[in-house]
Image (cartoon, rainbow, N blue to C red; front, side, top):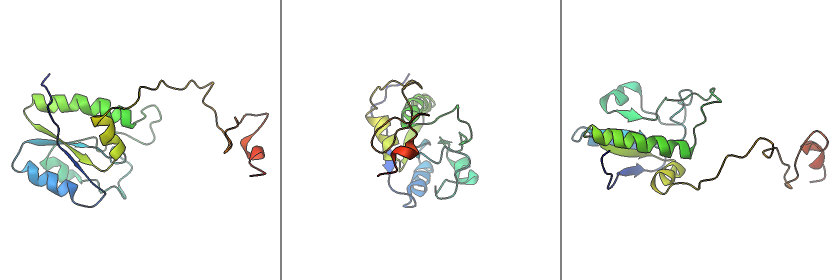
Amino acid sequence: MPAVSAVPVLTGPTGVGKTRLSLELGTTTPVEIISADSRQVYTELSIGTAKPDIQTRAKVPHHFIDERSVFDADDAFSAGTFAREAWKRIHEILERGHLPLVVGGSTLYVHALHEGLADIPDVPPSIDRPRDRRGNGCDQDAPCAASLGGV
């Protein structure tokens, strides 16, 4: 696996020209774009994401765009998932002799990739239950709606 000394990151809010700039770079350098956008990964979320169209993506390889479905509950995609999968792809891109370029505006995704996230275990279903605004557990004997009545 090739060593990674630095991976360039192009970040900023939606619509400022990150995609245009990354495509310009792609005309002179063999780049592959790692999309660090929490919504572009979902096929069904195109409105409001400034997702590059298929013709644009054909010019320069893109990763993490239209790869998941919001309807697949068994395929959760989080910042941690992104970071793990992105590092794998970064190494694959480097092995092909290309430059991985991280592009996107989801700063939590960029942070997870650069700094990592705390290694917090999954919460067991027996503990993970709804809570009201005061932190009281909600169940059949004390539903949340009843506890919110005096708030």
